[in-house]
Image (cartoon, rainbow, N blue to C red):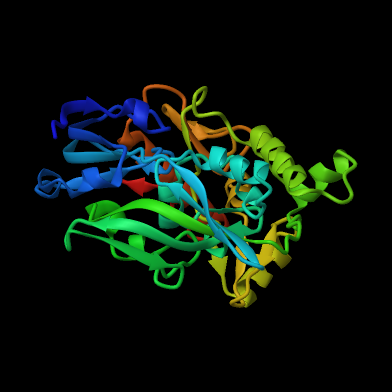
Length: 337
């Protein structure tokens, strides 16, 4: 296998940060991962680059996952089981499932990235996390040199977290997810509990939405709020929505009545990071070439010519402002490499 040398990664990260990889290999089939030479170097597993901050040149091997394929594995009385290759575009895959008549992922419409990265971050939006639909996944273990399968319980999912992040495999490159199998229940119920989604459907005068209606509403909401990385480089939502214990959250909401808050099953309360950032004065504000998006304060954008150091500087300034105003710590979502 002839890997490419000194490859520019600017086109492969949605923040358009200019760095190079010493070695680069595009992976289009699981069998490629078994090549011994891929095990002999520092590795990073790259998907769509939409949740990534590149802080400098990478002196190792970047494996760019581009394994295609999507199919119905089986179905039973309760669900469809759908497999997708790690290199499938996430939004395209969601739309394809809806076209086939297999709903259940529509609330995750228009999230950038690839299928293989979805479990690592446990992506979520508008009242749904991917762990609620994931049945199992397949991966290549570089250390054991074997293909493995993990079910949802083994992935140890939490809010924007998984076994892959807990073990540091998202940075060490030990595991390369090759495909993911989703369980989509046949007993479908529209999930429209987020106000933005409900308001969009109401504006369209849709009282009883179909799965495609929900998807279309979420796409419309996201397109209004979020910049297209092709036009304005960004990494999507940049900070986790903070989780606080119920008493502390109640105190904050009482002091700031407009603060959106969402009770969680474990008793904690999720706060809207975007609202906190906006109230701290950072919506549309820039620090050098990096700032928070004028239409959605949660999104960090590159206005041109930014480096990883610029991103870190703006991130720290936003965190400090929110801490000073609300005594709440914000944690970044993206992986820093």
